[in-house]
Length: 278
Image 1 (cartoon, rainbow, N blue to C red):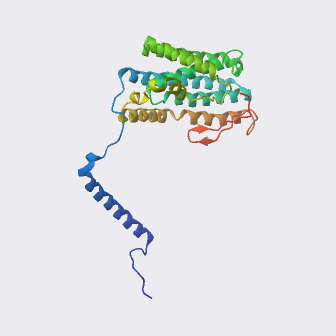
Image 2: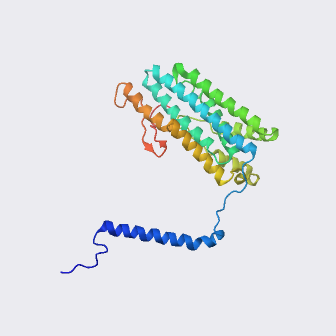
Image 3: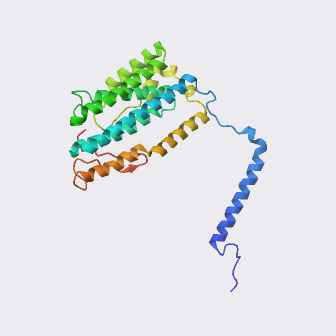
């Protein structure tokens, strides 16, 4: 009995032929389209960031990076000496929370919104750790150290806003921050926060034009490239904190003690145990 066509007798060869055919077709398509490529355009913000907005972006990023570095060093210090699994759990949950929330705030597209979000977060953290508030006694003998780092973060955000904003803008931003923090205090280590951007645009309405403050595509891509390179050099901080949670659990003397942090990967986020205190 005679075989049919041998073109597809071997699937691998057939696949290679298909790939070559597809590549040739794409090349011809590109050649055909190039003469008319002027008809193709990508809608994007054409207005580069102002010097002030660039400074706001860079300085907010630096403030966040310094805060996280100080927080991580403090966490290392606590884990090196602490034996209470409850304090260990709270410390690790705090580190995960500040990493995720501060990076989200700092990564707002519009630089002044990054500053605004960072400022509100810093004051929320500061209020959360205050005496008589939900986080006022979470870290036992380490409370003062955690509070000092958070105070520095809040003071830095305040100083940065004052240096970048006009007197009128500063008053407007400060009033918003004060109102937001009073209305939405942090209640536990889940760091639940309504969107600052949504709250701001709801209050300002048509007065806000955030697209003008986003910058060009090249500026946006450069920003994310710098962030990716920075996280690559230092290791993704959230992943590092989750990894350390496992080590801390083992050091507490059990496979999964009741006080230990339980996480599972979900992209760059973490699912945190809801049953533990704060």
